[in-house]
Image 1 (cartoon, helix red, strand yellow):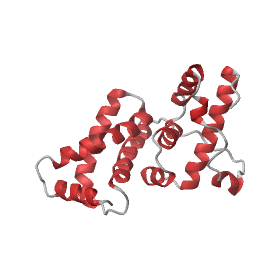
Image 2 (spheres, helix red, strand yellow):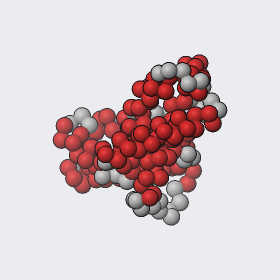
Image 3 (tube, one colour):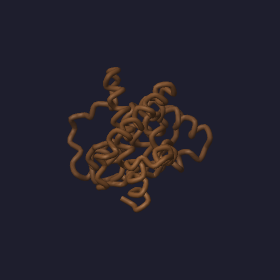
Image 4 (spheres, helix red, strand yellow):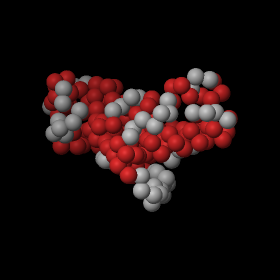
Length: 190
């Protein structure tokens, strides 16, 4: 935990006027992005963000500083969104097949697919964004956190509670799925 995080947490816990509002301003973008990527409904996202910050306020005394405050708040937002999807019986991920990928797949983060290069052409970019939107909530969230927000795997693991190897596997499979769909859709060689 950074010194700024410690001061902010102490101020909120000490009921310093404006401290919680400052915390919300600081982390509302993160909270919104995580929840929106999971639920995709603006009205639900607004309500769930409020719920997430209510939980942050109620549980901040339990924050031990073992990870960055950003990771802890991201974890709360992810948990709120996941619970929302579970209540609505919306699958958050595609089932993982029974095939044995071996250790090399889990350890291999880069599969040679470069999202930035794939986005070089506007038509390809539009197709890519459509395909990303069609992903199940978990895969969409992991992919965008890693590739668009550039959140490191270790931070994503803290936010989602998933093992790093599981995240790497999801990213590998999701990129492969996107590559196949873009190739089929536009004849793109990725």
